[in-house]
Image (tube, rainbow, N blue to C red; front, top):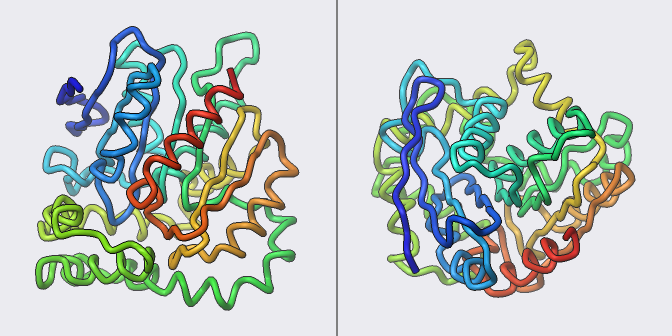
Length: 304
């Protein structure tokens, strides 16, 4: 399977990605999350390519040296603009968008932006798939989620840690041992190998990259920032694109019942399909790549 290493100068930084498949095939963009790299898609990509798709696996800004700078923004709107810039760079009028973890949040923003676009023009995203992280609930739905909050706050205890100014030092310590523990906690039934963890260890052992990755979390709760409020508003828009919310039942980051409840309330906003995989944790595309690929392909076909 042929692979091209791509770079793209955008918004004052240099972005990186890998591209697979026939240049004339329909495009699929697979966006990774935290703490992860595009390598988690390695076993999903061949199945999508064999099914006749062209596949792009971009690195999130801040996860490569060319995109980790003190001047760059690390917020959802900026990352969403990166992903759309890749689509336009590849001259793809439309693409299937798949995001995991932070990638799912970014995909949720891009789906909301599509809702606001002129319906007489071709919509850029044929389908949207949100892995591990469900759609953002609207304000009126939060009351229904209150019973889930105590348990979910315990699951999300890492998030306040990421707010600390020294959090990047915790990530880099002892060959990214904290990140390894997150993998083990979030995917408790997955016995990942040293080779599978190596690309993530490389990123989070680098102080510059670890610092950039934590900026996402520090920007997330800056409610006074109009860009943050705009991103949240976009994530709460109705679904005008066929959207899939897929999660593992053993996820140690987002509890399965929390995901189910949030997705169930979000399904009232439009075209949303919800699925959960047994025996699978947070990094479902790496744990059960064949099943995840088959579910994605079925989602693509149904939209077509």
